[in-house]
Length: 157
Image (tube, rainbow, N blue to C red; front, side, top):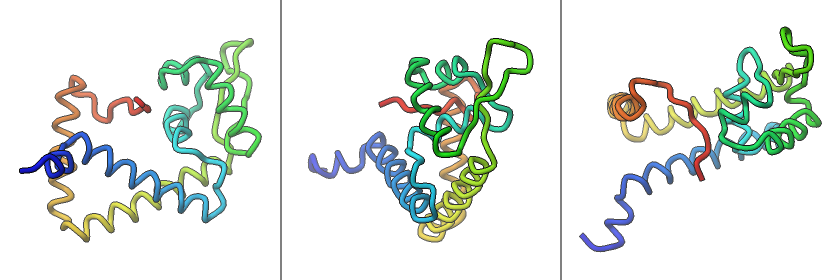
């Protein structure tokens, strides 16, 4: 095997590449149907606030970023109608960030697009192989996270 082949078959590169391809196609399609304000990092924030909302501190801890960075993300999403800040039900000083109806529709669109991409990939390699791939990844992720599947997905770059 030459260096190029080794690099191309490196598991890290293959997993990162497949995620990159999926996310790029997802966001191209989201933009085509009117969700042009959503960026890849927003998906991680949406994951944390669905379905019951979260505070800025909870989001910051989940994403491993500063409260200021979360505030900028939330400002952008709020300005574009995806989330809103509401009074926290138990902390009178706190705000809860929740999805708006527009945000919920964006999540539904994302789920539909990802399902279509996954279906296309399954047609390409076969449904059984796709199911095996998923089971194998669940096993590997579960072992690495002490059995937590799904694990806390967040950007690490």
